[in-house]
Structures are given as C-alpha cells and as structure tokens.
Image 1 (cartoon, rainbow, N blue to C red):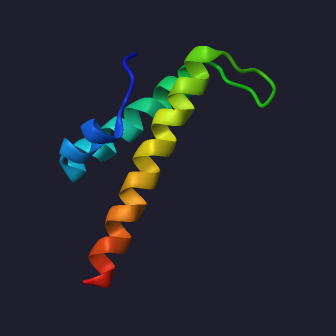
Image 2 (cartoon, one colour):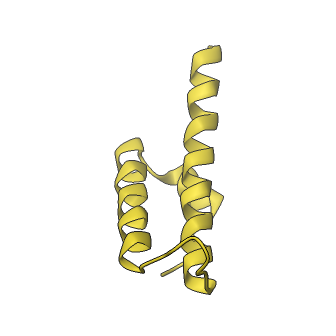
Amino acid sequence: MALLRAGDIAKMAPKEKEEKLRELRFELVKAGVTANKSNAKTKEIKRAISRLMTFSKSEQEALSKK
C-alpha cells in the first residue's frame, strides 16, 4: 500500500475519495485489526483514513462558509 499524501487527496474527485475511503476501511477489516493489535501496516491505513476524513470535513466547512 502506498502512502496517501494531502496533495494526492486534493487532486482526487469527491467520488474517488469516497471509493478510496471505502477501500481503506475494507482493507483495515481484512487485516483483522483488534483494539490491542497494531503494526506498521494498520497504522498507515488508519492514518490514510484519517487524512481522507479530515480533508473531506475541511472541504465541507469551506463550502458551507461560502
């Protein structure tokens, strides 16, 4: 899995972001993550999910302020 950077997220279309988020969540479930179990791969997946969600939320806030 490649790193997901903010610049890459900014270039994505909204539908593409949703698909990527769905894909990452499925990959996290597939990895069999439990509350106490964590490794480098699961940490990176969680970070990528967080980046996508944060970026989406900031975009929504910017649109609502207009």
